[in-house]
Length: 335
Image (cartoon, rainbow, N blue to C red; front, side, top):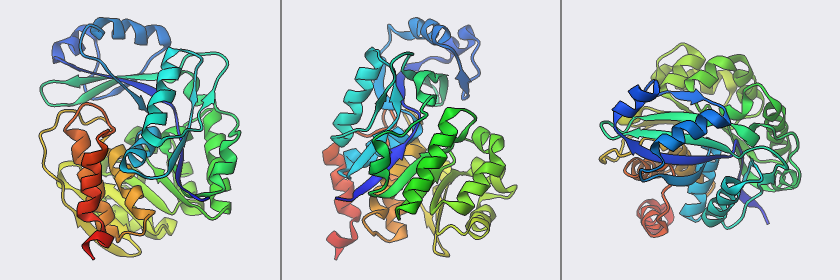
């Protein structure tokens, strides 16, 4: 049986907590940025906030997207590596709950990767402390290779393309999926990532990608152009059928087979902006694999992202609410 969407990413357990900005000053952290730390540094900061209401979710950009598809009711499968510890077991349980299945790799040693997301109670801006741990040392796809050969869409993020063992593993996975007839979808992930691997990203977009997700800053870093021009440049230079540029509060642009669609946001009170782009990608791919028109794919993506922003955590876990969104926009239902 074909699989709808399969994703490979850095498996990071998300710990999310709302804080006052004074804690950031106390800890010497720059608001709104991601800080790479080791296991001990992560534990020290976590000890400072553990008495607050900390929420745990299976995270990492690709995992958020795949879990969103699972909660929407899609047939999705995620592969990443976790460590032999309590967080690894918790991660597996969360992915299993979202998708009803998983293809996680269990490292024999090391710590499960983790991301502590400190969410400002003032403006919902997030400051992240990330310990990559076992997540980035995936050197073999194992059984996941066979799943890539039967999936309709294979999802990847720029984070897996940074220097390290995961890079070659991810590129190999893209090639396997592409050779088997799958569409390859790449989320640029972060402006920093684009700057680090700009030439490689252009190469992969040109040779392997069918769908690409970027935000406005990522599009600028990739093309040196403003988003409305960048989206056409990316589609033409890399010969990609579907290019999506997310514009934050200004909505998003979806360019599909030469036709541009402007997608409005659904206004909500922002609680946590963590992973809004991941949720958007999940909504879009869920609709796209079902053959929805590009505009409706974008509208579902925007609606799912709005729900994510209105809560703590990147993945919306209300199946009934998500089902109502799908029913609202489903072109089959409207017909």
